[in-house]
Image (cartoon, rainbow, N blue to C red; front, side, top):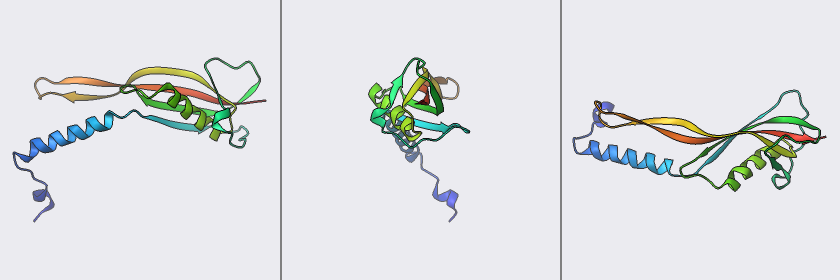
Length: 142
């Protein structure tokens, strides 16, 4: 018996398998999520980690002298959207790992992040999936 023949499905099993795959995809896409990617800058001092509760989230450039430690990129869902407190907490946690006193949000937009095709071959629709993209610069006050 070949592997291929064991993976063949009957005409009744195919629609059930297809429906199950769609249900799994919808269930996974229905969860609010916040993912982060942090990049420490090369050539700057790397201070000891700080406490996330002590890291400020700023929306404007700080007036105090500071050193830039690195960048934090946040990817978050928008449908359903996580609470903004969860997004800010993720920023604080990632900035704290770099030893930052604050994180300055320099980019915060909702934009298309993926697409999927629905419908039969002769009448397809392309649907986009929106996501929130946020970029913060971790800083240490001097």
